[in-house]
Length: 41
Image 1 (cartoon, helix red, strand yellow):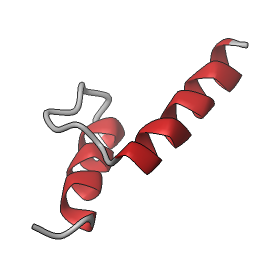
Image 2: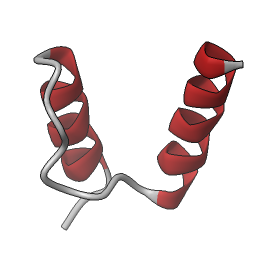
Image 3: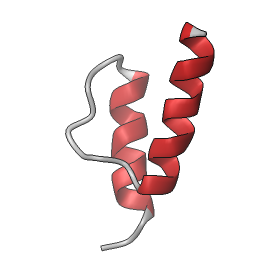
Image 4: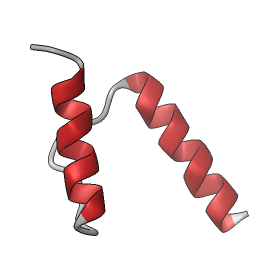
């Protein structure tokens, strides 16, 4: 499996405002957590 597939699937659901069915890559996960913290912070 290639790295971009889970991420693209995750982004696809994010764009629709839904919960992602697949866990993103660890690198992307940390980036998203940083975005969430900045939004809440």
